[in-house]
Image (cartoon, helix red, strand yellow):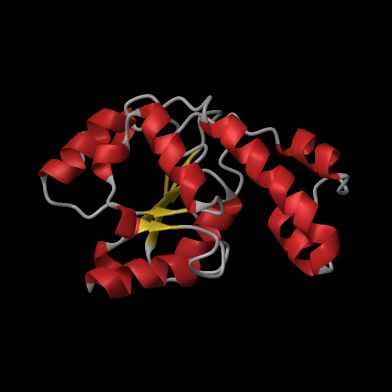
Length: 184
């Protein structure tokens, strides 16, 4: 969601510093490995930081046009995120994107194993009785693309800087959603 539907505002290095985690450590996985009593206050901090970023979110350029076009054609839209459900709802409200996603189509980190595992993609496909050939995973980060690849669906890597660091997991690389609106 962050960096895909919204312009990325998360500062993960700052978050790690605030949580006193090593640079580059995956936040969720690191907290899951900790004893519960050690991790509990850190989870609270993560929630606070995520809500902070959610209230400052801005929609990605051209995303509303793309989502309007897709939903107008009856395409089912879902969100698979490493955030929590309340943070997702806040982000969607802040960006005025709530109308495009049903609450049942939001798969947060508590609903199943988080990306890069394919559980969220598979759950949505099963729920919608969708075929992998008709499903696309769109994301800005390696974990999004790995989840899509592991679920055997097509992947679109959105990278606004145009670096496209993970070509082995990418079927289509775009730097702006305007690049695919006419193909929908």
